Each structure stands twice: as C-alpha cells, then as structure tokens.
Figure: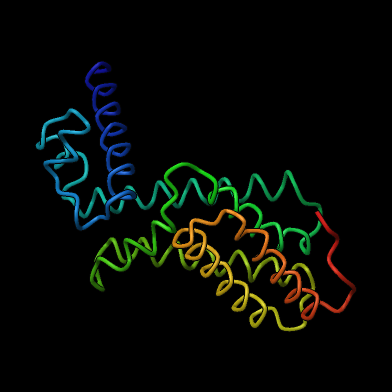
Amino acid sequence: MEIEAIERVSARERLLASASELFYAEGVHTVGVDRIVAHAGVAKATLYTLFGSKDGLVQAYLTARHDRARERMSRELAARYETPRERLLGVFEVQGLLFVEPGFRGCAFVGANAEVTDGTSVKEATERYRAWVRSLFLDLAREAGAAEPERLAAQLVLLYDGAGISAWMDHDPDTAQTSTSVAATLVDAAIPNGPAPSS
C-alpha cells in the first residue's frame, strides 16, 4: 500500500509538472489531455483518477501556481523590506523577478481566465488569485497608513497588472524599474509621511 501511495504521488507530481509547463506555454484550452499524459508518462485513466477531469487538472495547476506566488511574495517581502511602505513598493520589485525568468509569458491567471467560462472551477481559481492580489495591496496600504487605502490599492493593482503585460509583450525585464518608480509616486501622494525609503 505504501508503494502504491508513492506511485500515486509521483504520478500526480508528473501530471502537475507537465500541466504547468504546457498550460503556461500554450494555454489551458489549446493543450489536450492526450498531450499532458504523454508528456507526463502516465495513463489517461490516472489523470482522471487523480483529478477527475481536465478542468480538475487546470484548477490544480492554478492552485499550485497561486500557492507558489503567495509563498514567494511573502518570503521575499519579509526578507527584503522592513516597513509596510517599503513592502508596497517591494511588491513590484518581487514581481520583476518573474520578468527575467526563462520562458516568462505573463500572468498565468490572466491567460487562463481569458480561456474559460463563468461558473467553472477554473474561473473560481482565477478569481481566488485576483482576490489575493487585491488584498495584498489593500492590507499593505492600510498598514502603511494610506489616507484612502482602497483607492491606493486599486491604483497599485492596475499598475501591477499593466507591468506584467508590458514585461511579457514588450519583452522588457526593465519594466519592473518603471513600475516601481510609478508606484513610488502613487505611494508618496497617498501616504503623507514623506517619501518612501529607497530600497
């Protein structure tokens, strides 16, 4: 039974790794089940046993990406920045780490959201990610003492989205420097206790 469990975990990991690579590079709609199982080296029945359907696999792929993004952002912000004000700007610097990774193709959640219909489990996964991005900025804006934290958070979310699209479509990893600079202007205007410390 223990060997069986190890094999199932291994098959799940291979399927998720294959899904992550193929869905991110080519899109969740374009890549079919046959390609995923061939890439992962598992039987089609195993995919259905583990995930129930292709939608179940897409949801698991997005959930895993969300967990990694949240963990990375939390870890990097805690390690690099001391104050909430610095962390507000730090979000854009941490985002910029993605821009220089090989194979960067923009936000996986934007891509997946464009390909699915409302009311599906995949749409719910993309909406959970969006809620996290909004709450990240809102919580930091409140902690930093913004006079209107909701307004500042909405501005920074818009900038964050634009930076990701620009870095991908323009193939410009320096986008992070520009977005951080614009974010500093917004933060300075919204938080009346002097300019944010440079990082």
